[in-house]
Amino acid sequence: MKTSRRGFMGAAAIAATAAGTGLRAQPKESGRVDGPFVLTTWDFGPGANETAWPVLAGGGSALDAVEHSINHVELLPDEYWVGYGGVPNEVGETTLDATILWGPTHDWGGVGCLKRVKRAISVARKVMEETQHTLIVGDDATRFAVRMGFEETSLTNLRSQAAWEKWAAKGVKTDAFDPEPMDADRLAGHDTVGSIAVDAHGNLCVGCSTNGREFKIPGRVGDSPVPGAGAYGDQFVGGAVATGNGDVMMRFLPTYHTVELMRQGMPPQLAAEAALKRITDRGYKFSGGIAAIGIDGRYGGAQVGWDDGGFSFSVRNREGNRRVWVSPEPVSQPG
Ligand code: GLY
Image 1: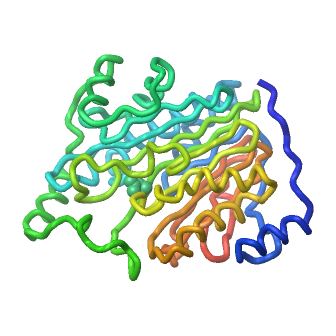
Image 2 (image 1 turned 45 degrees about the vertical axis):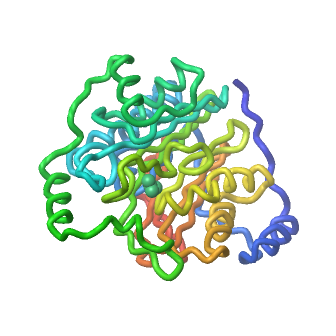
């Protein structure tokens, strides 16, 4: 499919739009890469991108690239926040949320609260490719995965078991019953893997996967499998992926917001900032980040709540892997 390369609006228009959001008036971007490319969030981004890159370099599809990238993280044995072996719920079980979009058809597939199957993004792809549905959840998602040929296996390992036993020994209630985070977000961490790729044919794919939130109430589904919340994309604009407190963020569809601002010509960084500002303007104190990239290769990100600049993403194209730390003053460097 031929993609349209949208022009960006002029500086005056950007200044007017930025002024309307209360953001600084001058556009600021983290950079731009030529396609094909793949962008992936967090510390596992460089490794995930390297796994996906041969697909793109060989002329393969962005869909395969994103699945490779996210599978890489889902299957890392020491990764606590994505895939098996991490983030137990209130009763000690690890469950997974994931979604994937294929740009040319705007077809989506997702799973929520998937149990006992490791490669959630691949199950999400099956939902997209094999059914008319967009989201399948819980034990029924497990049954669907088995029907599609996936192995059913425990998602608990020694690490997640130990984390749950330590927490359960305290005898406290899950913090999901605490008041909404208006004074402070006490959640320990959220490291959702989100990947966005554009292949040599100009086709976009966006996906994300997570095991959610520690000691969550069983059955909880976060932002990750919800289109426009954890991830969003438009074949003619680009994509955005989110990480952070999904219980808060999904109420604002921040990746949809980001992509729609990009559609109007706003650079990705400003668009991501505006989407997060929509949430903080309503009084929420939370940790959250958004990384975005246009089909023209302009990328940027924004974050709130990680004042140490801990949120990062990486962009891989034929020139290598570039790591971008998203802080109040974003810094990018080869890495
Ligand atoms: N952003 C991951 C989650 O809250 O589930």
